[in-house]
Amino acid sequence: MPSSDPQAGVDYPRTFQELLAWFPDEAACLTYLERVRWRDGFLCPRCGADGEWWRVRRGLRKCAMCRRECSVTAGTIFHKSRLPLQSWFAAIWYVVNQKNGVSALGLQRVLGFGSYQTAWAWLHKLRRAMVLPGREPLTGAVEVDETLVGGVKPGKPGRSADGKALVVIAVECHDGGPGRTRMHRIPNASADVLTDFVLENVARGSEVRTDGWKGYNDIGRYRFTHSVTNLSESGDPAHVAMPEVHRVASLLKRWLLGTHQGAVSHDQLDYYLDEFTFRFNRRRSRHRGLLFYRLIEGALVASPHPYTTLLTSRDAA
Ligand SMILES: [Zn+2]
Image: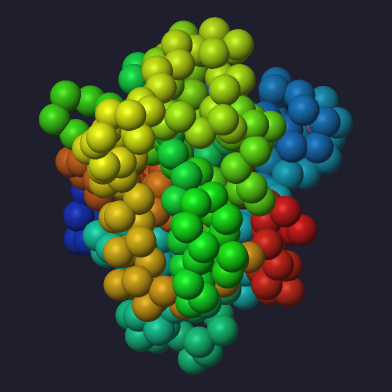
């Protein structure tokens, strides 16, 4: 039975040796998935009841309310996987332990997959699991700015994307460096789009720092303190006036160029932004095992993605 104490469920292997010892077989993996998915108690995915249940077999429970059977992997990225859960766990361990991310080829080599396509599909499924719903919004002083990412055509100066993707980034400012970040590919830098992004990602009452772009003019209407740095009047270049968001933007670009050789299409960019965010926001985690736990947790709430839907962008999926 899962514990009723939410913290008691947060357990994870600390080392590779522990990973091997914890998950010697499929049954051990299923038990772990049950513990993570129903950490706060069983919740029937079919009728929503959070009451009694019976065990049918490992990984399969029968809801006492609707009397239907629920598999712990139903509706998750592990659903109907032809490969064992142990392979998934090994893939997740590998992904979270490579500081700068992994390529599909790297994953294929490490897991000994016969097909590159499988490794590629798994990586994309895991990227989709990297952003948990209900994340805590950013708080405190938060810098927000847009940047252009990727593309080979030289962009026009100013706010026009022109071959590049436009990405809006928010970063918490802590003493001595950036805190957590959020980012999103956006169609344009209009007030509607930018205000939506801030409302979705920054807690009310926070201080939002932007440049003088008119797309940010509405922010002050929503219980944010809006601090505007007018770059042309201050005489400071942007990286001086808003250091944290510019630091994160350049790390993002370097990461896309380094790990992925810049070969990321606009449609796939959303998922790479999620991966970058996942890694960045947990860069100081003492235990990589905690990232393993978080990614398993995300994988259990992400819906399964057949290969064909992985080829489309999030908006279309
Ligand atoms: Zn039920």
